[in-house]
Amino acid sequence: MESDETRELLRIADQAEAAPYVDYPPTPWWYYPAVGGWAAAMVGNFAWLHEQKAVFFGILATLIVAEVVFITWMSRRHGALPMPGQGTPPAEIRVEWNRYFVSLPIVAGLIALAWWIVGIAVAAAVTFVAVTGGLMIYERRYARAAAAVRARLA
Image 1 (cartoon, rainbow, N blue to C red):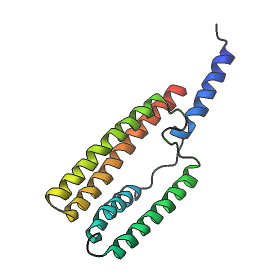
Image 2 (cartoon, rainbow, N blue to C red; image 1 turned 120 degrees about the vertical axis):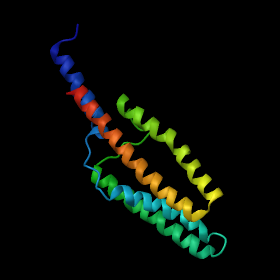
Image 3 (cartoon, rainbow, N blue to C red; image 1 turned 135 degrees about the vertical axis):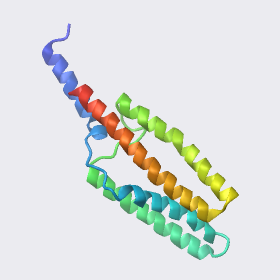
């Protein structure tokens, strides 16, 4: 039979394990359109691939550097970013991660379809809308899952 002290120690250990997944600063309002714009720029850049390779690779390098700077900033802001494959997220968070990763090929398929049927400019617009909106939905769902974890471990 577990003592009250043992149960309390287990609860504290569970809270500490869950902390990187549920204790984080609020997402700034500009995050969603910034990431959507970055992804749209990545897709739109392909318009230069056949005509001006130097422009294509210059924009590509700039976008990659911007991504590295952004991820570095985000890591410092959060203190630690939980990454798939590192650690064990709480079950509620794992469900949202799985939904997110299942949605990625669907979004990529929509973008590819738009590119194939209508062209790069429309694909870039679809990318902006899908990524911006998708991230907003994901963040809302993640926040609900994090709140559920905090409530369960309180």
